[in-house]
Amino acid sequence: MAASIKRSAPGAPSLPIPRGSERTNGLCFGFCLECGGRPGLSKPSKIVGGIEASRGEIPWQVSLKEGSRHFCGATVIGERWLLSAAHCFNQTKLEYLKAYLGTTSLTGTDGNAVKVSIKKVVQHPSYNPIILDFDVAVLELASPLHFNKFIQPVCLPLAVQKFPVGKKCMISGWGNVREGNITKPESLQKASVSIIDQKTCNVLYNFSLTDRMICAGFVEGRVDSYQGDSGGPLACEETPGLFYLAGVVSWGIGCAQAKRPGVYSRITKLKDWILDAISSKPNLILCTSCWKFRCLQQLSGGLRISGCNPR
Image 1: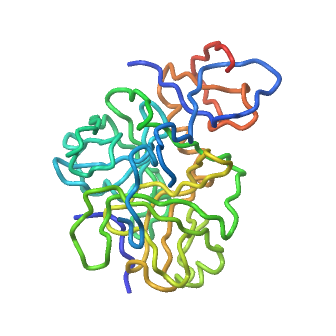
Image 2 (image 1 turned 135 degrees about the vertical axis):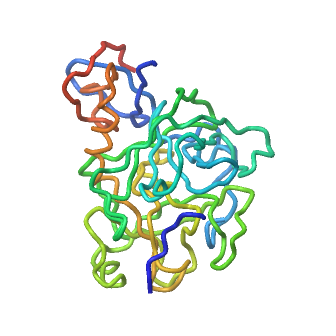
């Protein structure tokens, strides 16, 4: 059985740090925005087996549209930067792409959507469209986002950060809500899934996984991402109210089938390239040694570094 791809037919940007991060001794360079929080969430928290998300519950969720057609999800990681799956852009035309944020409505009927053009799509240079290895892409927006209660960046994990087996994480998107149904939901769907042991998942998928992949869902099925959810977030709450991006929706077989969990691009293995892709912009301001736990740790040569007031 073939694997189904989960996809339907000049300023200097600040980049995020986790809320509540601890300062370290040393100098503070650059300015970083808080990440991973949900200031617009007014109540506790259709993906297959999921429920509707409330506005502000997943403020880093993005709908990518080509014209009026939603084709993939994405995740906010900075004022000018989104993260998605590389396979989403195999047949798209940049001039027709738009990102929609700040809303749970796919059609924008609530009047809250913020629409931004995509300036550039950078697929991972090692992306393999056959096995979907290195399935990640960085998107540069044509204009910076203005963060508010309903638009927020998720935190990028440390390269050494672990998401243990059994940990509950959240998936979200506007993909098909059941296998064989091409109708997409009007409202953003969310679901809770568990991180699955890598060796177990590799056996279930006939040893087709790589180190750049991570599995989440349930071995018995029931809950899964599906067509149209590709590129969207697998976000894990590490401390109360603080979410990190563990994965990007990539591929799977069928839809919420038993022994066929969702497969996601593993961000901890791809973070170095993500930072390099973002840091290639001239005059980018990054935050270095201000914080003990920070989303961005590395600097590339030739960057302008600016002093800042520590928070």
